[in-house]
Image (cartoon, rainbow, N blue to C red; front, side, top):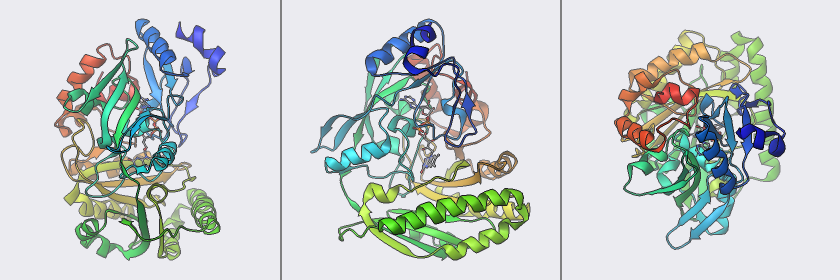
Length: 443
Ligand SMILES: Cc1cc2nc3c(=O)[nH]c(=O)nc-3n(C[C@H](O)[C@H](O)[C@H](O)COP(=O)(O)OP(=O)(O)OC[C@H]3O[C@@H](n4cnc5c(N)ncnc54)[C@H](O)[C@@H]3O)c2cc1C
């Protein structure tokens, strides 16, 4: 048994439960193995598969869905990390699958390189991030997985296979929710390091929605947040600049991000659980704290934000032109039905891409994300809001909560059958499945 050999000796974690960042998804795997390298990974995976066991891999546990859960063998591959090879001239950089984005960004910076776009935190592993279709914002920028030139995936036989351009294997493995094997390495197309000018500014929501296409055309990375029950959006514009660095001071950052946004914000959100009727008033009050600010810094420092407030989230990818109307309908539903949702809704965009089950497959995309504080119930509200997203042919983010299954999802993805064909080739016995993968991709 894998457990007898690895579990207690290497981890001392036998029988201990694992839970995700938000705390709502947890499991008690029979074996939780923190492998120390590709050699040991091969031994563990090969042995588990030959015994007919099921294997899941966890990254940083930042998915809101049960994507990384296992009641059998759970692997932690964060030791398979760091830069393996780098070619500054072409910008191609190969890194271990367990590399945390923050470390990746610092390593690229030292090479004079950078990721062209990133999401709004940097705690995920690169393999975990791409596996669910993690994205940032910008109409000309696809999700992070689109930067992958080559990918190394360990199959159930413990062998690593490399997939490159032109293969369905690469298009499938870029976004695969862990279902094709363990990603041991990715070769990323990076760009020369650059600085960003970030401007945060409140804007009338009607203007942000009516000028949405102009705002996303005029800014490389545009997004906005809006609290339900209010009509003021906080817009964030990030554009490349050659101007000298003008970062925020440490004190300003501490007071703004740590104390005000996350510390006081968290206290206020906990209180809303007890005083639900106060949510609209609190939301309107919060807009008074929105102010204009700007900074110029190294790109990855301005993509990522500091987040300590725990929450649950649902995010849907819609055809881009449907974004503003869908957002208006979501806000009207929340207000009309007095849903106790006190956290802001986020609206972003991305270019389409060609990963077979990417949420943005083949179409320019608007993303709308709703959040609920982790101490409060989310399911009835997310379920009703999901109906709005579904009416536009929306596709769920694989790492964020949704209530669909393979039967309703398959028709939304033109590449579905090609993905399933790759899955049949790479993992015919479904070694790399768990309950979530079975639900959303089929057994
Ligand atoms: C505070 C916060 C902010 C976020 N911001 C954004 C954002 O801006 N944009 C966005 O799109 N998403 C965002 N997300 C969602 C997050 O990026 C995704 O859920 C991402 O998948 C999490 O990466 P992870 O390393 O934590 O992976 P996990 O959540 O641990 O795992 C995710 C999936 O990847 C698989 N996996 C992990 N490692 C491997 C591997 N080596 N080989 C094969 N499969 C593997 C797992 O099995 C699982 O299916 C955010 C989440 C949080 C909590």
